[in-house]
Length: 433
Picture: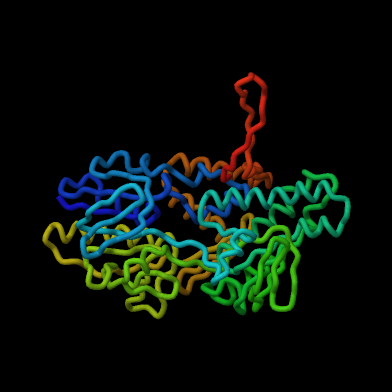
């Protein structure tokens, strides 16, 4: 019986596991350092209080419970020995016949890792709830202040990075300020908040066509977002950002400017690109190691293309399924096939009922593009329960502009316990929201 190890429970790993599930001649072990599969395309809606984490995340064990040949382990992989065909995790070591690496990416700060404390990225639920805490807390802080200058500083939001994530974050903050919170405060006017989207390149959304990018910039301006292009950030601290010789004071800074792959690729000594992605062969295997595959954000696949495939959910999903089917073909004595990507386009949403979609030469924008965005995202959600509640919340918020998860969960939580003498004593502990 062949043992297949899958590292990562994202789109690639999970879809590969499903294809290999309940096969009598294959045993599968899936390792992930989280216990849940996260639908990352909607993570920004958790950060902006539109959805709760449970609505876009599902326990991996629950998803794969019906496959008796799959074992799920919550553990962090720290090394791969290609010669011995072993995977080393923090709590265990495993031998494999086939290995699929789908570990994803993390935010890159271009050598300035100290910026992360002041400008969190958006890749995990923990980061999303921290961003939600920061965004909602500044309104509460501004409400307590009578000085208009200090109020404005608290209500200044800077988003670094003009890709889809940065655009969606900026649009969602603009929507919160213009619609959601307008009646909730007495001493401040959320409409007066400054929202600044900073892009180092000449325009936002560089992967989209120029006309759609211009449309997005226009729609952001309608939500009160200032778009600043050709403005590389040179420094970030707790009080603001530096753009060359210009200083922008802000209480909330969010990072959406760059990513780098999991360090596992570089640690294995295989060919990687400048982002740390593993350069793969036409069948998504690693050169000289046909039993090892890389997929999703961790893979640099550029065969027959001018540029590598982007880090999108459809890419990871198709690659995971393809790798699993190639493993099944090989174990059945058949030849492997080369990967061919079916391009399903790209999309971004700009606030409520507005989006842009690009599929080859076809381009859509506005309300109908947003409807298509809604349908596609609901379709890709894992469980029926997720689909139902996300649909319900979106319909509700569409008609009344309200957001359902506007909870501020602090990093520091407190509890009371009785000491040995029976007296109430306040204690504390640090807990990531």
